[in-house]
Length: 347
Image (cartoon, rainbow, N blue to C red; front, side, top):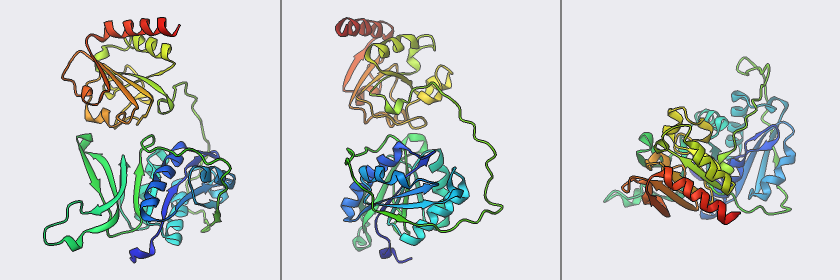
């Protein structure tokens, strides 16, 4: 493999029903940072049927170029035709870096594509940067340290440690990235895409799953990843019924209630509102951590919040290490009092 042939940062721009997923814009934002360090361009790969009209939207969020693979076989996501499409793009255009969102689709597509193009894949990354590998050169072998490598950081061993991984000998360097971790850029209004149309050809065979019917479930759950204010509760809240005092606080502030993994395991709240390594990564303006101890798995999902306010009766709880403001005491007294004070202040 001639590594020097591989250039550029590519992003898989996931769409469903001709609507782009927010993680595509987040990856383009990070892609621009990586491309700047490598003095190269960012290319979005848009796969689907009748999706060419979405290209300008990708340009607004930072794509220098958009490769469109448009075919009726790609109308709905199916593993094999989408794998064929993305792997063919990689083999044809040879990107140095390939980023995929760690969504349900991305977690299925990324590993299959990496195997098809014979490279590695680092899953569920939370940090991506360009640097040297190994991070610390082996004494006497400094000349073997490789530069301008994609350093992919992700929680490992259940979130109890952080691992930084590189793929120095194969290309592209592939990673799936958790939604909500990276930041999208401010859209460039009126940007027009430089579109490249590419179709490797599709031959339906026994590997193509036939979709008989699609049933869309209607959920009333709010998307905690979009919330500006989150009032999050942990095991210390005590019961499902006691979450009412958190809901009262959220209602006063126009916020949304979320929770820790322990709350989901106890059946008090659905997993849709779980924050953390096994839940969702959030970045609200204000994050209340109420009755949450602050295990590393939870902190990994909310530490990028602008302001973190912790309420816990244990003054040694790890959550206070990441909190901007901390209150030590009984949440059953503090939260209602806080709610009443805010209600009086805000009218």
